[in-house]
Length: 130
Image 1 (cartoon, one colour):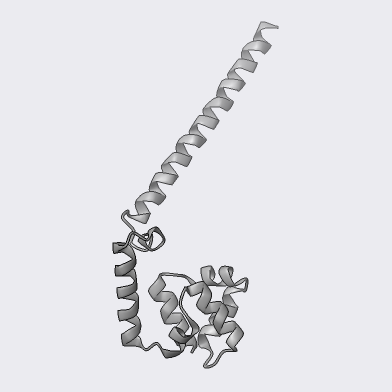
Image 2 (cartoon, one colour):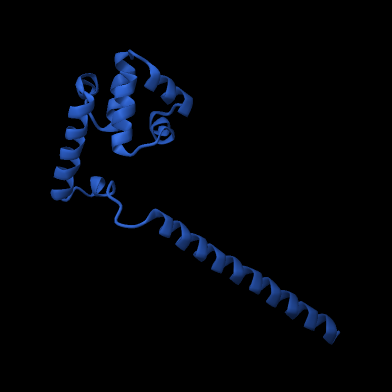
């Protein structure tokens, strides 16, 4: 059962940490769930809800039909304009976004440092005038 949950999570592109956060448990607990052969129905229902599948899907899924299910599901969702699932197909390079954010933060930091230098220069001039 746990391996099926892990596979669905991976096909969704979700990390254990994200699943743990959604479930309100630790990452270690998710790891334990994914190593379990059986699960309580209540736990299975919670995991299924977070993964946006039914508990029956988790119980009955196999490696081959799981891949087909998710490929078809995402293909259909995107073609119907479901914006939630469009996010699964990145139209940008995440590394580019990271570099862009770094550059913006660097510019902000440089502006803050320059503002502090300007303040210091202004205060030094005030002291010289006295």
